[in-house]
Each structure stands twice: as C-alpha cells, then as structure tokens.
View 1 (spheres, rainbow, N blue to C red):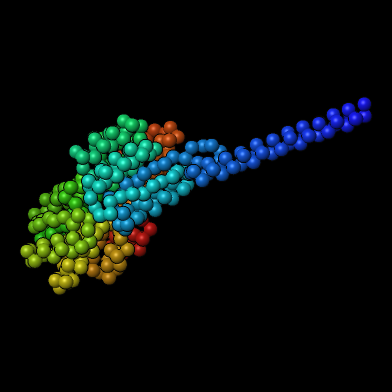
View 2 (view 1 turned 60 degrees about the horizontal axis):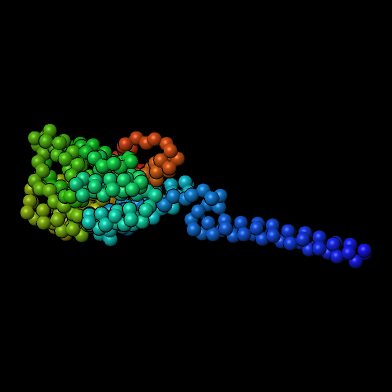
Length: 329
C-alpha cells in the first residue's frame, strides 16, 4: 500500500514537471516567434508593417537625397519599411521599368513622379487596379488614379521665377533659359509660368531655351553653347537644381563676369555661390518636406483617413539677404 502511494506521488511529480516544462517551452517559442517577426520587418505585436517603394528621378542627386531623408524619417516615425530606388542617371524609361517592378513585387504603396502623362498614367492606373495606392511627388499625373500629389505647384513656381527675373533685372534684358528636361511636365510647367510673366514685360526677351537633362555637365555644355551663339544674353535662368551651377561654370570659362544668373532649388553649392555674389538668387523648393509628407499621407491612408488630391509645398526666394534660411528647407 505504501509502495502504491509512493508510486502515485512519483507519477504526480513527473506530470507537474512535464506541465511546467511544456508551458515554459511555449513561452520560449512565443519569444522566438516575436524575434523572427521583428527580423522579418513585422512588429512583435503582430501588427503588419507596410512596405513602400519610393522611385527617385536620379539616385544620389542632391535634390532627391533631401526627398529621401524626409521620407526615411517619416517612415521611421510611423513604423513603415521604405525602399529607395531610381535611375542611375535621369532616364524616363528606367523609371517606368522600376515602377513596373514595384507593381510586380506587390509593394504596399508607391511614391513616384508623373513625368509624362501619356507614359506614366497607364502604369500608375495599373498599380491602383492591383490595389497598390500611388502618391505622385515633385511632378503630378493629375489624370491618373493616383491617391494624391505632393510637391510644388510648378506653374506657380515658374511665375514666381518670372517675377524674380523682373525684380532683379528691372524688367528689361535678353534671357537664356536652361530647363532640367524637355520631357518632364514639371520643368515644362515652370518654363510656361516663366514665359507668362516675361510676356507681360516688353523689355524682356527669351532668346533661347535648352535642356540639361538633369545633368551638371550637360548644363555646362548647353549654357556655354548658348552664350557663344547669343552674346547678347545678359541673364541666364535655370529651372532645375543643376542648371544655375552649370551656367556659372560656363560663364567662368567664357569669362562672362557680368552675366546675371538666377537658379532653382537650394543645393549647398548654389547657396554658397549666392553668398559670394556669383548667383543673384534662387527659387527654393522643399524636397525634405515633400518626402516626409508623402510617407505621412500613405500612413494616414493605411489608417483609413481620407486625403485631398493635392498637397502643395511652398517655394521661397533666396538671395544674399536670407540665403542662410535655405539651409533648413
């Protein structure tokens, strides 16, 4: 009888130990699962992390690096995984290919320019049809099914550039214009806005317009050729980040010391040239804010909040009086 009780007690102890080990293993397995989820980019709580792809016009371009910084900070704040990609050099077809790849990879959302309505709108609509929301940035595709546009009102920015030209020149002079691209809608809109203001002042005349293809070296080449062919040009205007700096280098090589240069965007080299008096002024966008806002809007969309169709970021004129303010844009 005593042996039976001893045997029963032993069995009970074994069962208790087994139960304890089972629950301990279950807790340990749960912790391992949480760690695996985090390594895969999913929060331990089981809440899904969204994956966004931002397609840049040109990787490692100073302007797009600022967009990237703003987007990265917002993604960290909202617990979103973000992937940055873009053409090695400005190339519309490569951007379209990257957009197709993001769709095929079933990204949760895409941020991209709408460089050309005819080419980009069908691909943006394709993404939306597959349940992938798209936010256009810097350049809009208003006829597409994109969720929202974030960036400069480029026509208004071109008009602001035109008023700056009038203010700086006194309303008279021969102008040469370097635009970033003759295919990008944003650049053509800025040129259109500039032309509208210039047309209101009979003393101003746009002598020539050339494209830099968003390339510093090509901006130098195009500006140099323009100045050789049109020595009467006294004012050069650029509509993208690389243009004014290219014009400045071309002017130095041709010893055109009295040439007035007006640029676009706030690259640190542009701001330094303004401080030295080599560039008169620039119209600065807010690329950091564009990237930050685009990611925030997608986060709000994921939370079920309604969005407006356009979110315009302001531009600011920078000259020697306020050039330091451009460092924070």
